[in-house]
Length: 102
Image (tube, rainbow, N blue to C red):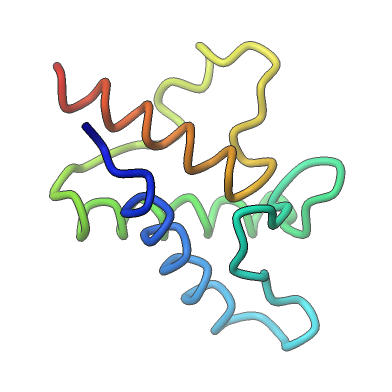
């Protein structure tokens, strides 16, 4: 079973790296409810790509699995796993669970 806290830790690690590149007023808060991308999100499309790439690296470091987060996006229909840290954590936990069972 994949530990959600470890997944969230990976996401927060990626946020730390992204925040190191952003001006102080544009940094992302490290909170489960932080809006990332979408109606209320603070990331533009380039920022989202940077976050996704960094999260993939953190997942590999913390779980020893190589993942491509956008790999199964077509299965999501109208859901946006990048809306908040919480939705991304849930998406990644499910994704990693499925990947570890393959």
